[in-house]
Image (cartoon, rainbow, N blue to C red; front, side, top):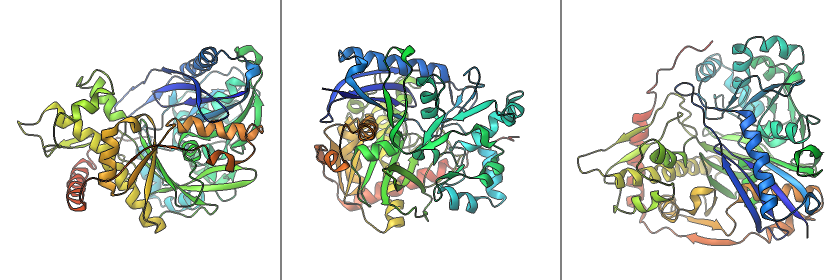
Length: 500
C-alpha cells in the first residue's frame, strides 16, 4: 500500500509525517532548530539548518515506517509563511539568514508606507494590511542591507522564496523555483484577484521581478525530488502555507466554517468561498487554495504569540520543565487571581496590528503565584482567539456555531475548555490533530490521484472531543473586558527606531 509523505516546516521545528490512505499516521519525526535573535524584535533562522532538519526528519520518518521511495506516492509540503529567504541562483547559498514572520525590523518602514497612503492600494490588491509580518518589506531590507545585494538582484542573480520555495529548490536540486498561490498571497506582492505578481507592488517595495518564483496551484505535480537526497525520485504534488493547509485538513470546505491552529502563533481562518471579500475589521483576506482551477479564499486573523508564550514560561522564566507541565501548573489555582498576561513579545497582530506593543503582565499582587502566571498565560491564548472570532463574525455576519481546533496546544484540555467558555460555542478537536500536515498530504494525494475527490476526504474527518461552554455569559464577558483593558496597557510601548 503506498503512502503520502508530508513535510511540515514550522517556526520552531521541522516535521515529517507519513500518512496512510485512510488519513491515519504511519510514522512521524521531528527536530527543533535554532532560533536567532540578533536584536530586540529581530527573529532569524539559518536556511541551511532548516533544510538539513527537514530532509533529516523526512529520511527518519520513512525509516521508522520501514518504507522506501517506491512506497511514497507523493510529497506534500506545508510551511511557516511569510518567512523570507534570498539566495544566489548559481551557488544556492543564502545571502542572509531567513527573516522570520515574527520579525519586526521593518515596522518603521511599514508605518511610513501607511502614512503615505499606500494602505488602500495594498489591501485592495493583496487582501492584506501593511505590516512587517509579510514578506515584501523583509525582501527590501535584505536588498538594502546586504552588500551588493540590490545590484545582484537587478542582474537576475538572486532568488527569493518563502520556505516552501526554498525547500522545493533544495528538494529538486535547484531545478524548480516555484511557490503555490496560498504562499504567494502572503508576500504582499501578489494580486489575489488576478493571481499574478503585481508590478505596482513590486515597485512600491523595490523588488525586482526576476527574484520571484513561478506560481502554481496548491495541488498537482510541480517537480520531483533529486535522487541524490536519499529519498528517491518522488513527485512533489501538494503545497500550501501552514494555515491554509490546516483549513483544508480540517475539511472546512463550506463558507462560514472556521478553524484555529494553536502553534507558535494562533491562526484563525474562515472559508469565504470563491470571492475575495475585503475585511472591514482589521483581518486579512487570503487565498486558501487552488485545486483543479478553482480558487477559494479565507478570512484570517493572526496572533503572533500563542503557544510560544508557554515556551517562554519554560525557557525564559524556568517555571516549567516541559511545555506539557503548564496545564498542571495552571490547574494549581482556581482562577487567574486577577492576573492578565498580554504576550505581545513581537507586537500585536489582528485585530490590533500594533507593531510597537510589548508583553505586559498586569494585576500582580503579593499573593500571585507561578500558577496564576501559568493560568494567565493559557488564558491569553484563548482571549486572543476570541477577539479574532468576534472580528470575523462582524465581517461576515455569520455568528460562530463551533470552532475546529488543531496544533500542539489543542491537546491541552484546560486551554480548550477555557476557549469554549470564553467563546460561548463548542470547540471541536478532531481525531487527527496533525491537520496542518494532513492538509498537505491531502493536496499531494489529490495531485497524483491517490485520492480521487475532495468528497472522499471529507468522510475521513472525525471528532476526538467536543468541549462545551461551562461558564455563564456574564462572567465570561467580565473576563474579556478586563483582558481588553490589559491589551490597552500593552499598546504603543516601544517607540520604534529609525529604519532606512
